[in-house]
Length: 248
Image (cartoon, rainbow, N blue to C red; front, top):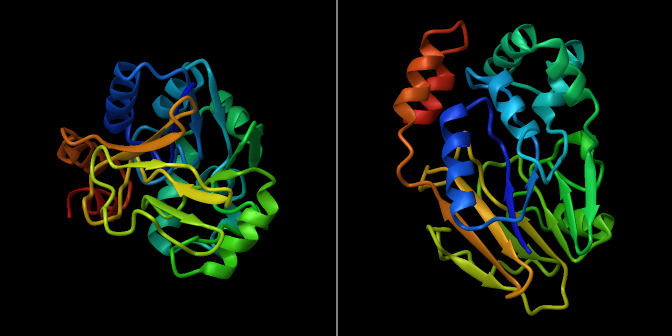
């Protein structure tokens, strides 16, 4: 099976369309979306609708979906820009799409894989599992119940095992970087972000899992042009910083 794992679309329809086209060209069999379909970007409804129409897909709730449904509580853990953006998103979300995201769970297990937005340990605390947070990573893996746990939320690709080792730390996760999983140790994998990448390459990123070859390969959408999405953001009442994040 070829499984495409992606996260943090954030209302970026242009990047999502490019991802779907790219992954289908690689003969993907199934998808897993790690949440944050909405927030920051100008096309939350279109992105939700496209993901709902993708067919064989598992989807978990991200903190921006949760925030859309719990605006009064979300201001406590969001900065003012993110809160203004999610307020705009919540206002424009259709009733049908609101109902859809309200039905999403915070964790899905499928064979040897777990899918969660932030962490399998206390998922609604929305913690950021960056490489330096070894204890938090260990707690996540301990609570996942599977060999491989996929998380998003940081917008940065990563792979780390339960001992804190990062086998691809020097790769930069450039397009085509692969990991051959031969370890008995549990691993934590972040596919990166489709809609708002924050690592040094700043190109949309996702991970393709091949269960036959036992590999995980990160792919970059190198021909993505953020200026189109940025112009659309500036034509709305979304904070201008949302456009800056894409083009800076």
